[in-house]
Length: 212
Image (tube, rainbow, N blue to C red; front, side, top):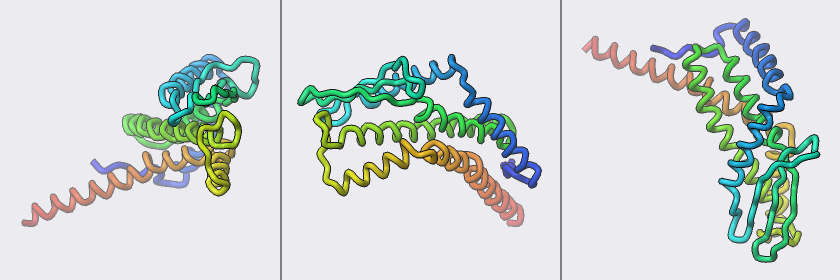
């Protein structure tokens, strides 16, 4: 069965854009139980992935109270010198927003629901890998300066590259807005085109067999 293209008319595209906006507004609504649940998962995953950061770096994620913009306290410690600092980070900004935007795009795509859910599953895998990369860049930026807690000593050129990458991935608006669009394109549009091309090739082979 040949996969259907996502947008067969301008009307379908208009409905997709409108549905994406509505779903994103719903997903980004301040639903405290959902935010707390995601924040807990974010911190558990952070401790599991980055508890030991490099040969001398120690990292610990825990809840942060009393900060309206940040819900997670990240402790950065140089195990060699014993110097540590605490930095606040937002699990909503770094992880939840990219995942919510991707979910809005995929669920609004005019596919049959089984295909839509498969695309959502693969998309969430890829977007969470990206979120892990964002957190890794945040930690690399924090651990590679000239402060006493730093565990990586780098030159000014490398430090400049790290600062640019940190701004692009962690701090900028595009850091959570653009990657979900790329992942959506890969799991919905590009994957559909690949399946369509494969179906066409299979049909051509079957036709050739019949002719033979």
